[in-house]
Image (cartoon, rainbow, N blue to C red; front, side):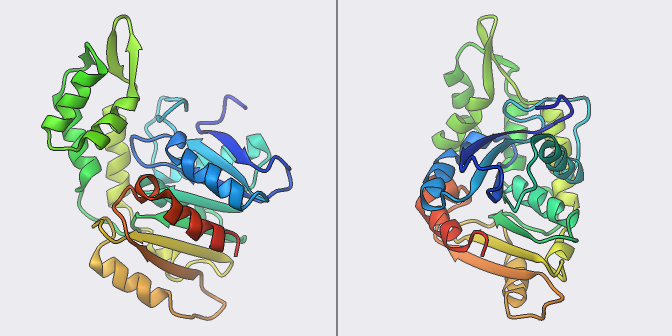
Length: 276
């Protein structure tokens, strides 16, 4: 891997360099291994595909770098990684924040065929809100170091988040010199979220590119995709002429973390439609 890559990725599934590739992008505060269970199950169902679990810049094991970046910058990171690794993604999937990165990547590749999967994320621009934004305020109010991982978990729980979310967020702690500290730069996280909320990417779906196939998974118990957006996606899912992107809306039972709560639901959907 070249030092120019601001994203890293680990392959699951087919090792044939000629195999079609799906790059899976996590949400804010996440990392590629969030999608490991889905990738392993999907690889068993679709062994013809190479699946890449990405750590986006400033997340997981990816480089921190000097610049926070934007949706476009993270989309460009996929290109840099691909050029470095000899991979031209056939499909890109993103959950939450990663869903909008996937759309930004599609916007940069209007001239070729591409399948894009948006997992409980929205192309809308709106005011900052939601659990990721609220969590940012909670962790900033906590100490910068902790005697134990459980101390951080308890602080997040006290802010109103579930134990599952608190434990997941605590995976971003590292143990250094006898204490636990965050690996995440929360100023960078705020910058990334600001760009997420500010940017509309409806043009990727409407009209989009004629060679693009966009699948949006809406979790029924999540409010991330607004009612207005669902109505627009429903209209776009109706048959259109060949000059527009093909848009598919899938509504499945689950919450925002549907891939963790019900991985089989996501695997079934991908196994049926990936590359189709």
